[in-house]
Length: 329
Ligand code: ATP
Ligand code: MG
Picture 1 (cartoon, rainbow, N blue to C red):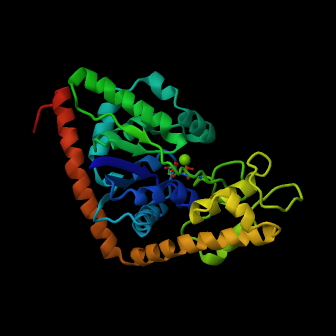
Picture 2 (picture 1 turned 45 degrees about the horizontal axis):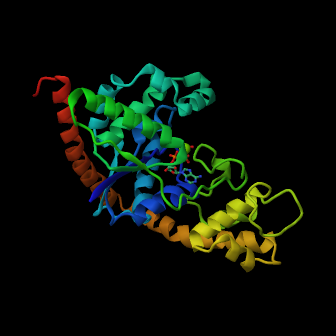
Picture 3 (picture 1 turned 30 degrees about the vertical axis):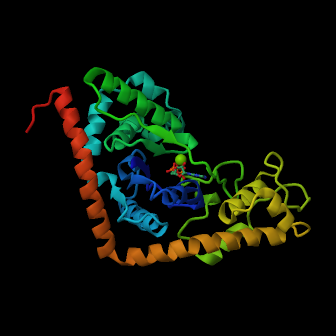
């Protein structure tokens, strides 16, 4: 089986975009690949975090992964900070990553613009830790969104540079772009993508049914008075976003959706999308709640995940340490 790896930062609560754009696709591939999925908790501290909140979100994310169908028996689910090899390889790779390369990362430019009071070294070297996250597990594929493609490209360059000096140490991973790469936009801000760092436009996976419905009823549609469900991404981005959500969930195409709501207007359409979303995420939320209440079970999952991840990661790390010339213990 080919190996696949991905992670999400518990830097905010998981939302519908994370689910439809990432986690759902992972869950669909469970039987096709050998999968590693982790909570990238170490990456979150490039921005100040509330320690209690970070702990809560890390565990909640694990529960949501499982509730979404990532079976911990078939996948290795773990917390990044439970596998010291990430930090250890991260340091080595820092020394094989160029200042100029890191300076060109658009995410660094964006984030340092946004957090002017805390442009720390970790924010800058984030991509070499991410390269370590990936390369430790020798994956064939890394599923990533558009925003991470530049970092995977850098990971490949770092790995090739290292391999050129020391021989075949790392497998060169391919970015894996899902065929159904749903890109979800904020409900109140259809101009920008739904994102953890913009909680206003988010439908969270842990939201209660009535909260979800309220958010959909209040979703921004368009400024014209047409009141007609028609796919027009340019002029009606809000409606297009709702149609995309509805389509991803129900499997209906845009034409079918236009037919379904012909002559019915937004007053019918918006609650219908809300209802479809509730049907999809309510069972996930309820199962996640049940798991969070079962601390012993989750503890067992992340301990076993850490065991498996440590075993694989340490194999790669030992190889690297030997190659660069560290004296074996
Ligand atoms: P942040 O604001 O911290 O960047 P985020 O909500 O963008 O948070 P990420 O941690 O960057 O989430 O991404 C996690 C995964 O979810 C990635 O695979 C990413 O491509 C996917 N993803 C994030 N937002 C969306 C979205 N709006 N639509 C589809 N997929 C998304
Ligand atoms: Mg993002």
